[in-house]
Length: 263
Image 1 (spheres, rainbow, N blue to C red):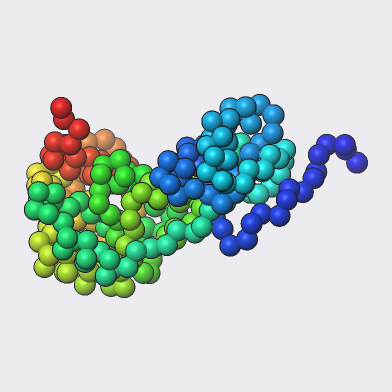
Image 2: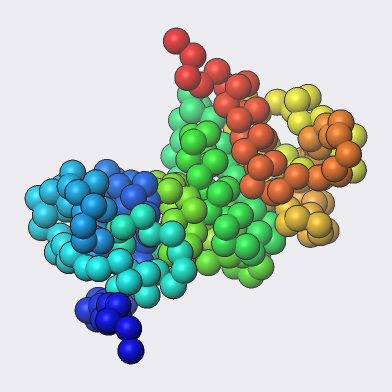
């Protein structure tokens, strides 16, 4: 038998999510939602992660240095970049919390919500959360059914956004959208067959932007609950974009209209 290391790593702490990658772990630390335990690859990778390790130890977080094969085994094929963090699982916010927050927003800060209907792929979900955070969205709304979980893969893809953007889970999405409208939020859905262009919409007002699943789009009741529909103008050969790419474009049109980031 080869003398290559086939050591099993230590038993990971139970009941915790595993977050992979430098950026995702650094975001956890920066937002004060630090992991319970950190596994760091020994050797050169450990040297590159000195600052992160020092920060973790300073916060009283247990740090374990291990060979790469132990991290590979725990990461199960994910690119971990030499670091794994074990932290409490994320939880969805309730619809009650959403209504409370909407009622508490001031007129000076028009809310921007992202509504995801039927987004079940965890990579797309994580990418949408990352775009929502970058665009300054106040929250993401998902239905109880036909929605991706808030798991470790979502956290990895989101690069910290899963910790910073509240995700509200509602029992009935169409009814929740009706409630948003009652609270003064304009609900705009996206659909390839819409007549109006994205760039004709007014996102300076309190807005909920609704994105449907790739291929099927929004469900019928979701579509009917929208105040209006817009589309991305497609001038090439492809007929549609990946939902996370389309989400980013739509959100940053809202950023542009709201003048965020201007001196």
